[in-house]
Image (cartoon, rainbow over all chains, first blue to last red; front, side, top):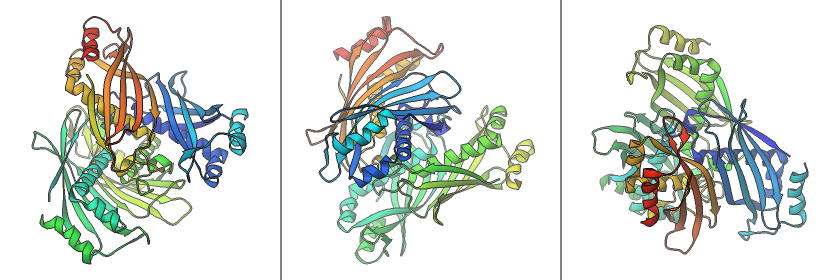
Length: 135
Length: 135
Length: 135
Length: 135
């Protein structure tokens, strides 16, 4: 499944260079992931199973500066389900242009909220996550 | 007691007008309040008594725009202890000048974390808070 | 004209108390004001006339804590046009409930970007702003 | 030269998991880079030469969750000067422990603010940046 979140660039997103600040992109990416998880029903599923997403790595490229008034399209999809971690690929496009403002690989583990430890991605959890790849 | 917190204005604090953004000031004020509470020993005291600060009103004046590289001095002091709420007065000065970037009155109540309800400011709590006025 | 902006409360909006942080509300209010200005055509009009909005006061009440997953409705309308400043009233409602999470009065002046000084609200500027009251 | 910036974790840095939010770390890293540039005199030098730092990639590992009240030590040093880009390595340690909360490689280019284009890292610019490696 590929999911799209729209974000309009506002005055408070910019920094000294009049471009969207690098840290703000991580909020845009997080917004898009919550949107994805919500639309897929995963927020409830993970809460029910006492599991939390914990990010272990973000590798983000900043490609074209986004400025005031532009609309950003954040595309989110799962790109890899490993035995211990999974990867979500996200791309921030500037609407109405060919430009990619940023793209990122976000790697996370699933934490058992009782033990505070990452669980292996197997069984029911693996099935649940794998649906995202095939959709 | 008057408490001072120093904050240097950085590129990521600015917005489209190249001034510190209005929302960012509230983080500066919060930073300064945590600093005050920490230095006064109140963080532990409130935690021990199961009480939390909950802000009910902020009235902030934005006076002189603060820009990149300036150092801000955030002064924090208690200005009023009422029967149900208390007021902290905060002033953000631009160091090395006579300018006041912003000043604010922050009104809060003390919440009992078990009941989720505000408690009257009396007895031991009143004594504790009143020390801040006389110091 | 009353304008409505929708914001979903996400994990990164919360703070230590698991409620939307007080500073974050100011970003929600700013988001809603940009939306209003955009929909009314004011962003272009003000840019064309070399005028910028500068906030001089925000008086915000925090009423009911907003938490993860709730949808906030931010209502924005002009409530007063003075000779030197104007006031925008904003209210943040928790969708599907009767609760008001926060309400605020935001007072601003119009700055001439060439001189860096506030201009009196008269003539064409007054007409432009006054439309918002009657709509 | 290795540079150290201290940041105290406050209530507004946390998110739904009661840990420092992933986007907030990028502000901590930016804070530390500005501190480094300021202490080394680079802010003036770059401004004088009409050059701006533009980040093209951040690769950040989140290792140990940082929580309320902890002091973070952000260590910053240049680790590589290439022909077109340079890399700053940053590490966020939790003071008083052996724990690394996060570490990151931040890659940037130098932009000529007149042309808006990245300049090759050679001549005087290369000398300037290379000092950071040997110090």
